[in-house]
Image (cartoon, rainbow, N blue to C red; front, side, top):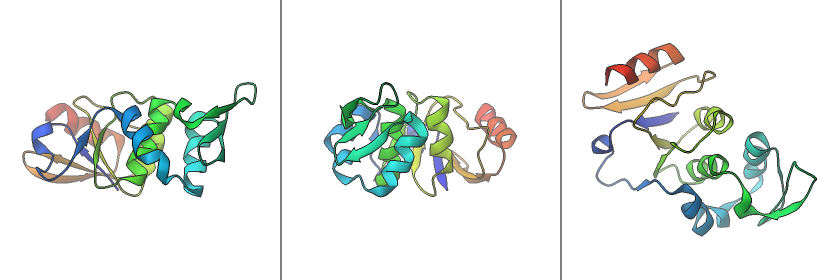
Length: 146
């Protein structure tokens, strides 16, 4: 289940917040990719992981370096491979948001509502503690009230 933080001050002091997902992915996460990355890359960018650091683009089937993935895809991969770190999702499109909300673990930060219509359940943290939400409407209401 994804954990959401709306305010930076609600992120635990011992947790790291990453707001520059491209840089973090290129320097750290890209080295950890395995077979699970294939699914996430195809789902978000429509590309295929063909080698450790190469993808086949959905456009003209061109072979590109992995750093050419979208920021949303890099963010989802950051969250998947680094569940102990909090990642900003402010640069993610709807296709990446849907995948992120479907992850079994991970921590995200956004100061404004970024919610997948297909979400199942999430943990949200605010000044009053943790809350579990199982619908888009409940989470949207919480986000507007915080």
